[in-house]
Image 1: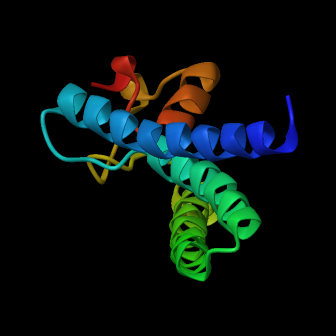
Image 2 (image 1 turned 135 degrees about the vertical axis):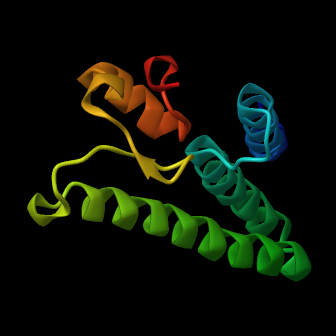
Length: 132
C-alpha cells in the first residue's frame, strides 16, 4: 500500500470510529427507552476525532484541522467530568454507596453488580442488567 492509501485508510478509520459513537448512543438510548449519552460515545468521539485530525493535518486543511481540534477538547473534557464523578463516588467519605449514574440515585446493595459487571457498566456508561 502506498502513502496515499495509508492516509486514505486513516481517514476512513476515523470516520468509522466517529460513526460508531452515534451507533453506541442509539443502542444505549434504545435499551433505556430514553435519550442517554454512554461513556463509549466519548471514547469513540475522541478516537475518531484524533484520527480525523491526523488526516486533516496530512491534507493541510486548516478548516478541517480547526474543527477536529476543537472537538477533541470537548470530548476530553467530558471524559474528564466522568472520571471525576467516578473518583468522587469512590471516595471513602462518600458513604461507600454505589451510584447509578444513569438514574442518578444510589443502588441498594442487592442491586450492586459484581466487579466484572461494574467494569463493563463503566465502559458502556450504563447500568448492568443486574442493576435494572
